[in-house]
Length: 219
Image (cartoon, rainbow, N blue to C red; front, side):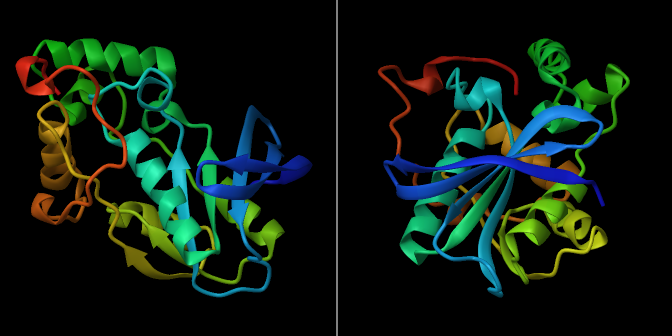
């Protein structure tokens, strides 16, 4: 398990309510990971949790190619409704390949490759993410076990390998649209994600002032 250092924290008012934001430094890694906590999670079992890898293009630039921002929003909404939970915000962009190479992958997708083949053509594995730092953060927070909001069984397995007790997987699918439906289908068909697109939860945010169905971009 990674060694992490809790070195700063504050109480932050958000549109979802007040959260305690705790920053961690990981030994041997310049990235700073965050635990974003609502309620008292210390000593608790079956804590509603999301292990969320950062997505600059989706969360900051509001890209419509993925569902990362909507999934993060949904996690905060669910935690606020439950009045207890934690988002582990992990700095591993692009399923672990970094932002610059993620943009290279996007360029390959514009040539017709899907999200899996684009990675492979550029010499990357399908998913390079790791979760040992998430396990270390949960241990520091005193969380006994979690109910993990994810559609990805591999994430459940990864956390369990690193010692996290995952009591159950909570389906976490936001309603798709024209520009990310193919991406979601590929994750289901080729990466083992589990969901039925007909069961998706509507997004809380509007897509914008234009109709995404009018744009034709490869996933």
